[in-house]
Image 1: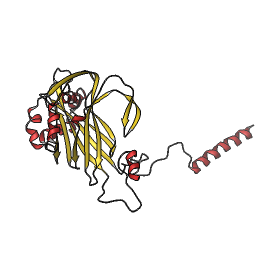
Image 2 (image 1 turned 90 degrees about the vertical axis):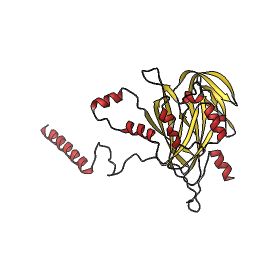
Image 3 (image 1 turned 90 degrees about the horizontal axis):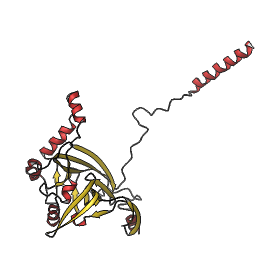
Image 4 (image 1 turned 180 degrees about the horizontal axis):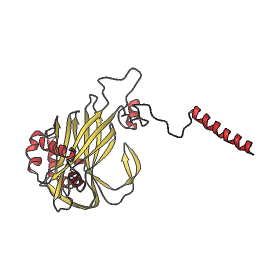
Length: 304
């Protein structure tokens, strides 16, 4: 009996030593030094990456709605479109280089680390005036920028050719439909269309690229007359906000929101910056390679 126990113990010790020599281990394999097991997703050849910053500040701020716009180029948007946008509460322009000082100050203050535990606790109790997101699009494909929270009710006033009309939308949210077109020299053309998504989600049929497709979502009203384009280089930004003296307009609902624990409204401004664009036909790919731009249907058309 003792001999059997002794042989069993020796056998276990032998297996343990063999496992150690062969390198068996329950620990997961480690990544090589300086590398990660999660590789970053590379941008497509026609990919465009936008950085979208939302800034909130008191409505009717004299500096942000007044003198600051002397540094912003509004002339890149055609006059007729700019007039239509203004009548419906929107204001837009292009900034090259650095942001105007008032906006830069808000961003710097939001990014500044709290000096004490008390200041950090105070920041947690209130929402930051700055929020950021990134959007990556293929050239010609659609993306959506959420411009507002969901309103229980939107009694909207629309102005067209001097005539004002009204309509009320339930459970409505402001959306900016975004499309980009890579111009081949590291610039892009950004196309924005205001939309109001409202009501309850339901199955519906939509027309897209000449096809009728089923789509589940809220009904929407597309304000095609207010659509506009802006050409952006790497150092340029599109600024979009509301005119504070246009209550009840589409721009007002897009770019204002109630201030937390207060009856006053806050104004919002979107800063849209071209973060990256890979497509550049100044340096075409090697012979035999091809770069396809646009939707799959457009790519088939190009191939023909």
